[in-house]
Amino acid sequence: MAPAAAPYGLQGLRFDCGRLCLDLVATAEPVERLDAPRRLRAWLLGAGIVPPGTPLDAVDAGWLARFQAARDLLLRVVHAEVDGRAAESDLQRVNALAATAPPAPHAVRGADGLLVRTLAGAPDCGALLGQVARDAVELLTDPEARGQLRRCAGESCSLVYLDTSRGRRRRWCSSEVCGNRERVARHRRRASDAQEMKR
Ligand SMILES: [Zn+2]
Image 1 (cartoon, helix red, strand yellow):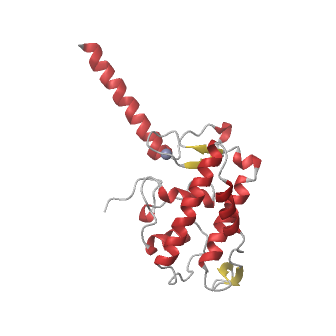
Image 2: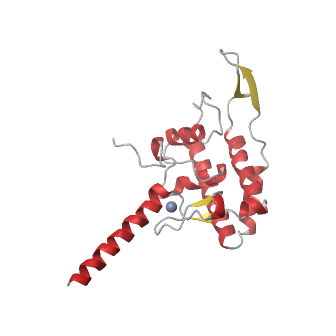
Image 3: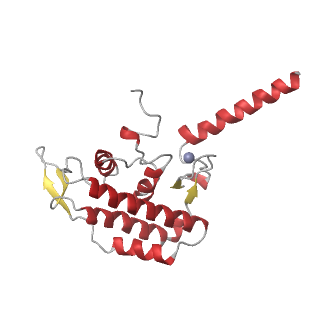
């Protein structure tokens, strides 16, 4: 299989939206990426929400359904807040998810003597969802971070990311994907205009 185009990494997942909750929302773009428990395991590790090496055998179809539902809820809320206001009932759902405490991190001594992060126990689905929901609450209630929320200018892309670039002029979720697509389209338009002129 050919390597996925940047920024899509292993299993077609990407982690470049600038926030944990936005990276979860991004799993719905451009097609459903959370379509199997193995993909959810890869997302949990890739997002760094669980430390490398965390046993994720418990991740099953039940986890997948809960993460998809939370993702769809966060997608609605984030997009609604970018455009205006999220529904009160949706905010209450996010708050309910955020009420569960995230998993407790533990510092343990690794074989090389350095401290490494582990989880106190086996990861719990509700606790991990709580961590993502808390990130969303913090993001949406932080005026500075909210001011950096952008929707991608790509024609067929509605990804929301945090623009932390200098001068706040980032237009694309990814210059490799949407930026490049736009450059190619512009080039094609120019080439066909030049053809027209010759006629
Ligand atoms: Zn995009």
